[in-house]
Length: 72
Image 1 (spheres, one colour):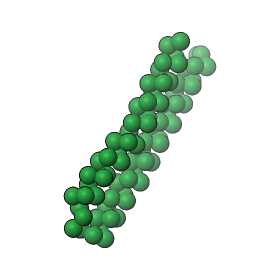
Image 2 (cartoon, one colour):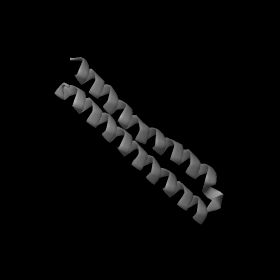
Image 3 (tube, helix red, strand yellow):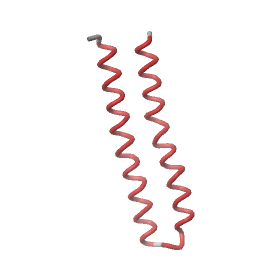
Image 4 (tube, one colour):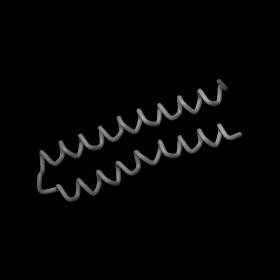
């Protein structure tokens, strides 16, 4: 087993764990905000989707970089 293969596995695991934690924080904050002020549901939902998209972008970039390093 090559060191680069282990590095790709660690990067993939870190990206998945980080995305899961980040999504959990974003969604729980949205639910808490919606519970406090139900009239802002639409605005909170829009901001939640933007936040989830940004949280998901980082692991995708990390995986892409890891596979590019593996291909070298």
